[in-house]
Amino acid sequence: MKKTILTGIRPTGNLHIGHYFGSVKSWVELQDDYNSYFEIADVQALTDNFSNPQKVSKNVHELAIDLLSVGIDPKKATIFVQSMIPEIAELTIFYSNLVTMARLYRNPTVKSEIAQKKAIFGNEGESVTYGFVGYPVSQAADITAFKGEAVPVGEDQLPLIEQCREIVRKFNSIYGKTLVEPEAIIGKYPRIKGLDGNEKMGKSLGNAIYLCDSEEVINEKVRSAITDPNKIKKDDPADPDKCMVYYYHKLFSEDNLSTICEECKLGKRGCVACKKELAQNIVEYLKPIQEKRKYYEEHPNEVDEILKEGTQKAREKAKETIKEVKKAIGINYFDDKTK
Image (cartoon, rainbow, N blue to C red; front, side):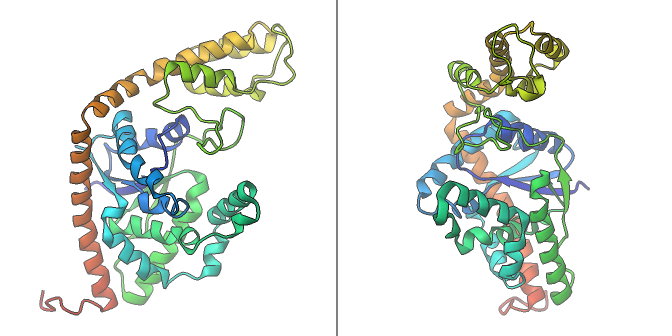
């Protein structure tokens, strides 16, 4: 039998090429070999968007279209909406008793994200909510609700998987072996940098190219990408490793990469022409994805039906898990004990 994987993404905006190469491209490949659950994590998105729920709710449908457009196949995988699975919230409460606040604050991923908030919002960034600090507990509930045996993640997410494994071990040690301890599947592709060279590509940073961006927008964004600051004139030699344009050429221009690199080093390639070539290659690469997106945009009811069916299927699985968990804890008061 195929092993089960669970992974998810927050509906806070459209997918960009960082999402695509950093995670979603791997999901498309994995769906053939695993029993796959792909979660639209709207509850988790509310941990730092609770005062703007419209941002989350309006993007659920958009994210579903993005996932379908890149090749997630509802005949092979289950796409579902987190908030429509109340069993996940129940599991989160049970697991919260097994984790100390000190342990949550030590989680490197949580520490890093709190630091980012402080950098953006100053002292207000210190006012993180319980929901934000505790989202690794919710994530553990996501994974275990579907008996996830493996979780596709980037290296920066490994602390979250370890937190889940700790919760599973503690639950099983207290209540008896009930839950599955997941393993991490490290993605093939590294985290993709932003157009400005930032280690993270993101909407809030204004440095992302989205899968749904038009040709005009892509050209404009690529023109803003940073290049080697030591290259002043068109025929100056440059270091491609200091150039974000070359960085993206490695993703979109594999067939011509060695020529691009050599011409850059010898000063035979101007930045304007290099950016135009990159932009055109990105446009061509995204064309089939955007064609599929257009189809789903024109058939919104089909998208809704896929989400509804996937969520119903996911909930049936989560119901089985919560029943086993309550039985293990001993709070299945009204169940027929003979069954």
